[in-house]
Structures are given as C-alpha cells and as structure tokens.
Amino acid sequence: MRLLLKRMLIAVAVLLAVAYVYDYLSVLHRKAAHMQGDPFDSVTYPHLLAIPQKGNRVEYALDAQSPMMTEPCVHSLFPHEGYSPCWYVSRKAQSPTPMFLLPTARFL
Image (cartoon, rainbow, N blue to C red; front, side):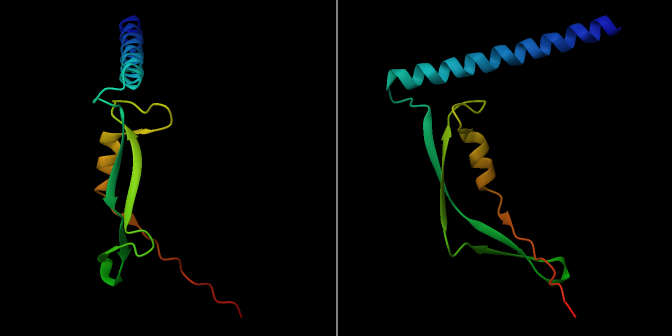
C-alpha cells in the first residue's frame, strides 16, 4: 500500500513538473515569435474598497487615490518571469480590497 502511494505521489510530482516546463517553453516561444499571441498583457480594473460598518455591514467605495488599477500579467497556467497569470489577476480584480478599522488606544 505504501509503495503504491509513493509511486502515485512521484507520478503527480513528475506530471506537475512536465506541465510547468511545457507552460514555460510555450511562453518563451510566444515571446520570441513576436506574433499576435504575445504572452504578456495587462488587466485594468476598478479598485474597490470594502469598508466595514456597524452591524456587520460592508460599504463598497471606489478608491479616491487610484480609482483604476493596472496589473501586468502573463497568459499561462503558472506564473513566469515575475508576472502572475492573467486568469489569477482577473479573478483577483473581482474581489474588493478589505479595509480594517483599528481600535484607538487611550493613554491616561
């Protein structure tokens, strides 16, 4: 039983490594080709803030300092060359930034 589990774990690790290498080589090929399928892109989205209110309510507001955010990304399954995948950035863009209210300390 342990031998089977160990072999399955090694097979999954090898499969993930092969997928990562293939994804990286795909990005390098598209980067070198300078064709329409450029692997690098940027996602622009509104920067929303989630502000907690009394009664466990949340108010959503557009950030006044930087209303629109632009984040560079790479069209791939895994992050490469310091860029997050575009599917992750698009998903992250849909969630607002939570704001936390810190209690004030009183000194006597």
